[in-house]
Length: 312
Ligand code: UDP
Ligand code: MG
Image (cartoon, rainbow, N blue to C red):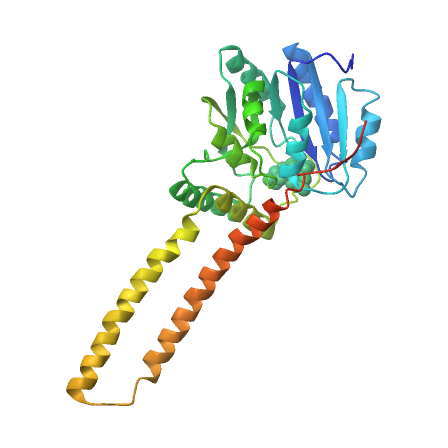
């Protein structure tokens, strides 16, 4: 057990941030399922700078559960980075990212494996029932997918999270993408490969609480959109053209009015409206530019996605 050089068939990759309460329940469930499947496996845990005793819980669990590897990041890098760290470490023929809070039912791995044996390179778990998510989260998720899939060339499958199975071939492709800000759902979709979809009902968290609030989700959505589409940049060209055209006609009308009817002074309302409207439009345009330039700036630094402090 635990021989560093033997490649397991299955790598399960679990990013953990403040999850001390669920680690043991998760381990019991996942090892039960993996035991029933009967293939060799490894469990790759990434401690993403947890502020509670997640690391301690993982390290002491390792005495009971073999085949565990613990990657301890030097601080909290966020779920996308933590997942990337885990994927980079995984040695298996098939790789399965999963949340430790048991919102992704481990039982499904059996079905994943069946599809894999039948030749699938990617098996996606799709949530058919999101009643465990808040109303606001469901609505905003809907809007995100709708908008994103309209403007991006690569559609991100709706209601599909990171829970999935991928073969080594797919992981190799994923690792060819060099960006350091990694919007995983988008990257998964970008590499392609034929996917089989398996439906499931998303459970409630078993313990602990979600670390994604409204602001974090908004930024996550911005990351997703700006990583995969330049539409928000291009739209200003057309908006600008339309507004200039309207302004041109309006200008002509004013000039003709002055010539035919003579000079008159009123017009405070129309002047103010135009100035304020254009000012607003320009600020939005600059804001969008800022979002992209900020990201170009971050990418151009070529910093690593995460830093490993130590491994257990
Ligand atoms: N997570 C992480 N780093 C973070 C935030 C979350 O590794 O900065 C992990 C977390 O421990 C969990 C998974 O990502 O295993 C999903 O997080 P969460 O359950 O909070 O998100 P939700 O299910 O509410 O979308
Ligand atoms: Mg969760």
